[in-house]
Amino acid sequence: MINKFEKVKEILRIESAAIDRAAANLDSASVTTAIELLENCAGKVIVCGVGKSGVIGQKIAQTMTSTGTVAVFVNPSDALHGGLGVVAAEDVVIALSNSGETEELLAILPALRQRSVKIIAIVGNDNSTLARVADAVLDASVDKEACPLNLAPTASTTVALAIGDALAMALMEAKGLTPEDFAVNHPAGRLGKRLTLTVNDLMHESPNIATEATWLRS
Image (cartoon, rainbow, N blue to C red):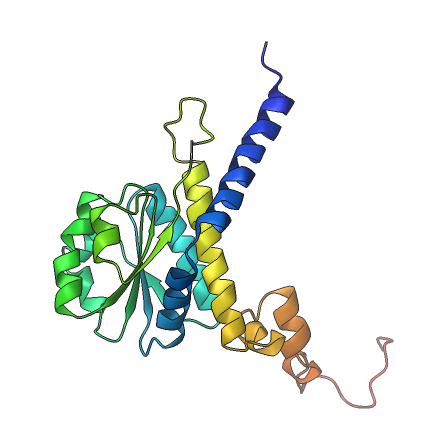
């Protein structure tokens, strides 16, 4: 009988080990190029991915946007039917694909090249088509998935997300984002309220209460 508690811990260890492996495998020059492309981006960051990679891409885009870098997620399938209109020459694309051969993603590459857009690939196969056309390749390969069948994207998506988070945080630091800057984009959060909400925002004049009124009703 499977010990469910031990199984959960084993899966967490597999994913943790995958992140450690990714950190060891990252190429310094590629990471530097990726950060410089993002830091010097005169437009916005376009994040693309299909399926589970798309879900991870959406989170990366949201993290970047909330930490001082305007980012938009574009589904490659939608991009092929008009969504490419959001992509401009001054933008930088982050493309996610474990295989590096995702058909929908490869299908938009010619249009990206026509726009002279720089591409950062977060990819599990550095010999793939996507890796070969990218300006910076970040190795997100894993030895195995955490899935018992080694099929469901688990460790690979965790690694891709961790790399995306690392890019966003390194970029945030490079831009010198302060807690006050962060709070501006999070006005409803606890930090945002603490740093941006004032008494003046909460108080207002009431014409229904006289200045000499008491708490007691007459």
